[in-house]
Length: 231
Image (cartoon, rainbow, N blue to C red):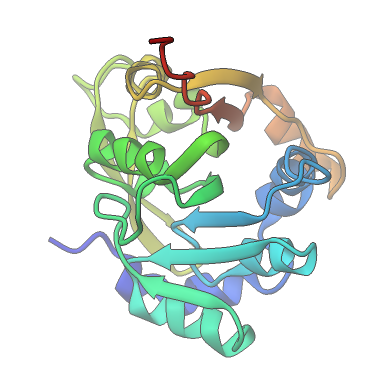
């Protein structure tokens, strides 16, 4: 069954442009970049890079970034806009990289698109180097729960179809505890948590984003390797 991304790719590319939509431009980009800038990251992986907008932003700061996405049309757009970039067709559940390959792994609003989130999180942790960071931006569970129908409670896990401006894709609602359990189970350590609010944009629209937290940001660290026991 299709998740809608192939059919919605053209509308998505047009909607994102170079600046992204309201949530990215006025809520998420600044705090996400603030968690990255000046931290000494050399290599990064963007899981679910789409048309490559955030990859281009990080590449401009000198980070060597690889983007993966399972939608060929989105990767084609990323390559057209960034011919020297490294964009690969792959799914989050089967990352084609060696263990501990990246200093930084990013999931920027991609967890909500992934059916097998348990495998995806395990894969992100696998390719992350010891001491490295998994940086996540995700829709808040309070927001995704609004898509539920009768018999679907906040604590349940379900898929729903979301439609806006010619885009129709499948998103997943999960309670925050589901993500926390998986991330902790992967051996990661929570270093930062935030529910960012708008810092600009049209006031009436910004007010909607303030009434209920649409997004959350989490920074997880993979522990350093333990030193060998003395002999």
